[in-house]
Image (cartoon, rainbow, N blue to C red; front, top):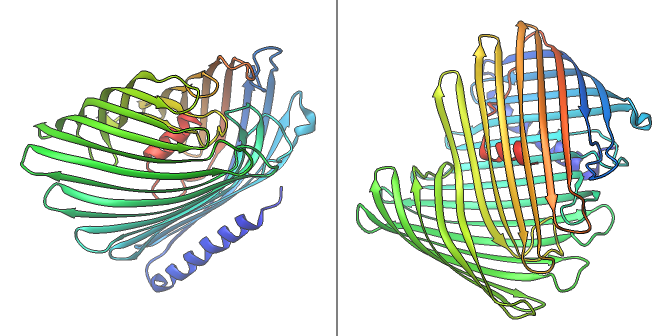
Length: 474
C-alpha cells in the first residue's frame, strides 16, 4: 500500500519539527547509534477469521530485517526505524508478501518550560485482506508550563486503520483525525480549574454509516473550602453528526457536582450527582445519576476511584423509562511491589449515546477492566501475564450485550547479549446476543527469535495508561 498524502504530510511535518528544534543543539554532545536486527516469528491461531463455526487454523512465519538509528543529546531524543518484513502463510498463500514498516519517535525540550513529542508509525500491510487489522498513525503534542500555576497542552492524532467494526463485525478501512487543546490553572495548595476542547472526524474509504464529526468542549473546578471538605464540578458538551444516517445525530450536555470529604491524606469519600441530557432527532433522553464512592491516592493521571449509583433513564421516544444500577470506575494504578516486578491495573466505565464505532446502536453502557503483570524470574528470564474484560450493553435500539474476555502471558529469555527468545499465548472469548454477529473463541501462540547486537537508544517509553489500554483491549 502506498503512503497516503496525509501520512506523507504528517511525516514531513514531524521531520521539519525535528530539524527546527535540533538547530540550537547542534553544538551539544550527540550520541549516535545504528542497530540492525533480525527477527523470525512463528505464529499459530486456531480461529483466524474469528468465527463461531467453521473455524480456520493458520500458521504464519515472518522474517523481519530491522534497521534503527538513534540520536540523543541533552535536550532532544530522536529514534528512526525501518523494518521490512516478509510473511509466509501456510494455507492462505495468496497473502504471502513483503511489508514495509517504518517509525519515528522524538522528544524535545524546546525551552526550559516547553516539551514536544512526535510519533509516527507506518504498517505496510495490504488493505485488500479481510480479517487482519493494521494501522498507520501519527501524533504530536506540545506541553508548556506558562507560569508556576498555569500549563497548556496541544495534541494532534491521525490514524488510518483497517480493523473490525463493533456494529457489524466487518473489517473496513477508515481514517480518524483528532485535535485537542487543554489549559490547567492551580490556585491554592489543592484547588484547580481547567478546560478542554477536542475535534474529531472518522471517515471510511467507502461510505459507511459509522462516519461522523464531533466537537467536545468541557471544563472542571475543584475547590477545598476547608482542609477536609471540598467540592468538585464538571461540565461537558458534545455535538456529534453522522454523515450518512438519519436519526442518529445528537447533542449532549452533562454536568456533575460532588461533595468530597478527606478521610486520610490519600483517601477521600464523596457523594455525587450527575445530570445528563441528550437532544436526539428521535427524541430526548435524560439521565438522573446519584452516587456515592471513594477515591484513593487520586492524581491527574493515576489513582483508584470507585462509586455506586443508579441511572434513572427518562425517554421521549418509544423506550420505556427505566433504572439501571451503575458502577462508576476510574482506575489506573501501578504497584512496584519489588525491584523485579510491577503490576498495572486499569478500569473504567461510561455511558453515552453512541460509541464512536457503532453509529446505529444508540445509547450504551460500557465497562472495561484489565491488568498487566511483569516479573523477572531470573537474571536473563522475564515473564508477563495480562488479562482484560469488556462489557458493552446497548439499551436503546437493539437491547444487545457484548462480553469480551482475554487472558494471556509470555516468557522472554536472553541467553546471550545479542540473542532474545520469547513466546506468548493468548485466549480470547467473545460473546454477543446480537443475531448479526457470532460468538467465537480464539487461541494464539507466538514464538519470536531476535538477533540484536546492542539495545537501541530511544525516547523513554513508559507504559502509560493509553499505551496499556491499547495493548490489552485492542
